[in-house]
Amino acid sequence: MKIATVAGIILIGLGILSLAYYASPVRFMLNAAIQPHGINLVPPILGGIALVGGIALLFVIRPGKQKS
Image 1 (cartoon, helix red, strand yellow):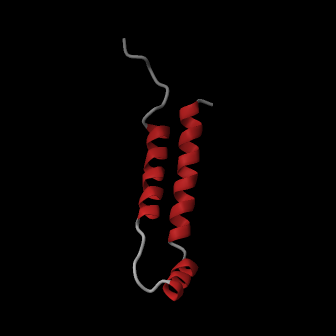
Image 2: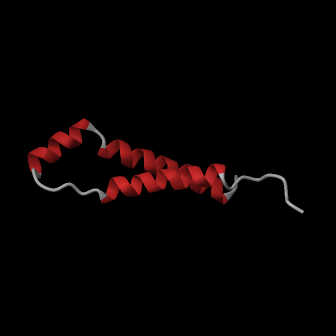
């Protein structure tokens, strides 16, 4: 496996885990009980960027025919 493929798989996994964690109903209930004001949007955005970056690494950078 190439490094880009491994990095893409890792980024996709981290992105899915990050988004699943921040979208879980239990976390919303706990967050509402502990912090009623303010939502931190940085981690879900980073999870989305990791997911898109991983997909880009897997599908955009793939070995193909060499242009001559």
